[in-house]
Length: 103
Image (cartoon, rainbow, N blue to C red; front, side, top):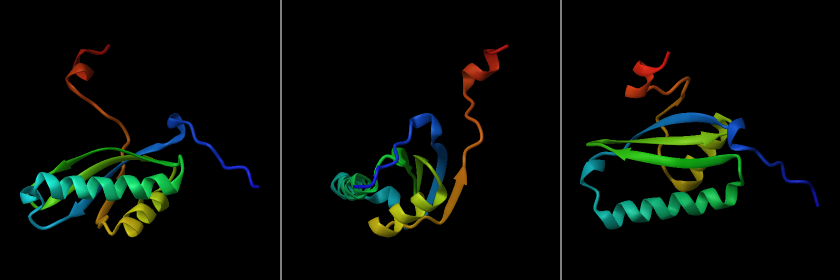
């Protein structure tokens, strides 16, 4: 049996995925739950190299935050889940109001 490579969270990059989904903002709670379940089921088969953090549902798009070893895992998740991944961007830094107070 081959050793399965294990990744620590610090080794994973953060990605922003833009998914064009017409009328995404009108999806029902049940529809969103179904999409979430499908995503989680695919992730369970992919190992520790990819992790879904959360998503923002907007009018015609869904913006997802993932941690992953590489972009190929993001694309594989999208393909296996039947989700679009129209734009994938690696996140360089995260800032918030607290950043202004740092010295």
